[in-house]
Image (cartoon, rainbow, N blue to C red; front, side, top):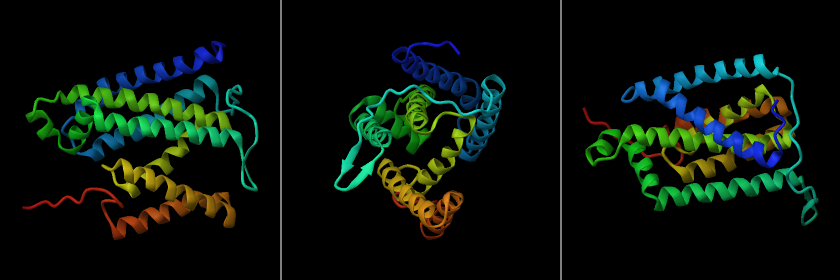
Length: 235
């Protein structure tokens, strides 16, 4: 709509999404501090529906193509051909995953994020500003989501239906463990493999069904996910 050059449009989209994340956290999420996680989850589900509706009202539901900005040379691994957009998208994803892991491990803000996610009351007791940590988490996650959307959009185009990927992401996080970054990585590889096999042998319409069957099976065997922390509550 603004016809910005690509080198300016991508940073503007990432920064604008980070600002949107900050506004959402401050106006909708912060009042829910201390509430059960399901309350926050349901608010975000409703908000997603509202945002999809706004996108379709403003830009319509038609799919659009992003300008080419990734290398287009064919990628060969042995005799197998990889689409260059998929290959370079995976490379960018690996770089950002490594950056997030380093932040969680070595940066004070990353340590505060981990502590707050583990136990808000304990984080308060050691002097961590929990509301500020929540803001940081929402801004960072919104910016990462924008980068992910740009990568996915460069491969298959952008539209209001891109949010369907969020269902697969939710499955990945639950299967891997809600509090485990390693679990999310391994869960992502497993779910991606399941979707690929289901799409190849059963048809594309069965991909989402296959992932949710895996989700149900994992939750029946390990309710906290493959690598999630097993919490024991004593009454």
